[in-house]
Image (tube, rainbow, N blue to C red; front, side):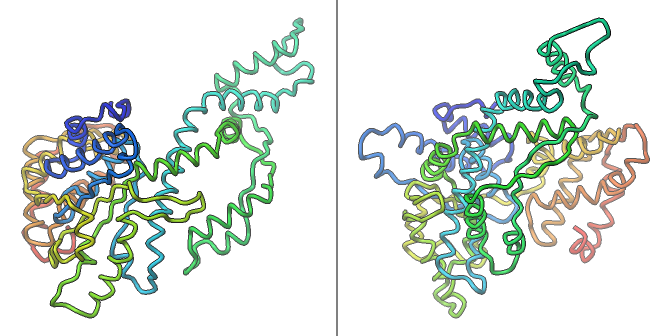
Amino acid sequence: MSAQLTEGQLTPAKIVEELDKYVVGQRDAKRAVAVALRNRWRRQQVPGDLRDEIAPKNIIMIGPTGVGKTEIARRLARLARAPFLKVEASKFTEVGYVGRDVDSIVRDLVEVAVKLVREEEANRVRPRAKEAAEDRLLDLLLPRNAGRSFTDRPGEAPGPDATREKLRVMLRDGKLDDREVEVELADDANPLVSVLGGQPGIDEGALSGLKDMFGAFGRKTKRQKLKVQQAWRALTEQEVDKLIDHEAATREAVSRAENAGIVFIDEIDKIATSRERHGADVSREGVQRDLLPIVEGSTVTTKYGPVKTDHVLFIAAGAFHMAKPSDLIPEMQGRFPIRVELAPLVAADFVRILTEPQNAMTRQYAALLATEGVTIEWTDEAVQELAQIAAEVNRRTNDIGARRLHTVLERLLDDLLYNAPDIGIQTIPITQAYVRERLSALVADEDLARYIL
């Protein structure tokens, strides 16, 4: 399993092998990101000051939508257990944009890193936390100074410890799940923050800082009645929070954001400028110049302290239909030395996407319908037909790559998904005829396909 691989075990070949489980084809892009990830590990092994001088080789992925650009970057980050942030470059061309907004990329990346590290720490201490929560729950069910309880039998005179252990066994066996206990929980609600939240023009980063500021004045608690299982979960999370060293976790999160963070900048072609075009291109070039310090390496102030971006890996992506990578300003081009082209998807690729990945869509829909007792069995001919139809609709209308399969599958299985609760337990084969019957009419009508598929 990839989750068990250490950083040193993630060789480029192994990384590509792991990516192959989720993304079909695109060998060049996978090799490029695999080498970039391995170079990070290599940099950590370099002794002395030279380590700090080795900068990551950022990557531009060029290819149409839906061919796997985002998925490759996301899976790479998950494989490396690295903080990952996706941003749309076109977001920074919107009305009301000011240059300092690009700093939010780094702040958001650190937030992702903090969440990632705290989740790891929480998973590490959760077994101990659950035991502590169990003892607190037993105290609520049977205070230590209490006498006999409902577990005592006539003629027996067990001590409080024996009674408590009987209660513990009953608790673990789920025999007390219907009982209610009153627990004290932290009350994080704040009227001012609640009113401000979601309002247009309110910076979420500032709002987060406001929440922290209010929390610093001492958290209020509230008493609440909960079923035993709910109370156990709530108390466990309280104990987890106590066991985590939050300062150490924050330091680790900042370090991981700086040295292992991956930022995926999508739609970078939307801020590329052509020499023949003017007007809006001025603002696009301005966005590139605002992004440049972050990509080149700078220090950004966050609520967790200063964060350096010198060793953050940036992966940019774009279709580049209306522009070329050479339309980016020279300084930006220089910060993305590695360029890889991703191939458009054809019917054969769709067949592989529907069958090979661990999270293949055919498996996903089969699992969804299985919850209702309906078993669907895909024939090879049905998958081939489905792939041909998706490729044909992409050819006739906008080519949205693998995303077309979602719309085609949803249309194909629409009746089954709607009627599954009433069908009962049965097996339904998905054949070539089944696919043609439900989809051929849509494909034949090009105008209809434009709206429905």
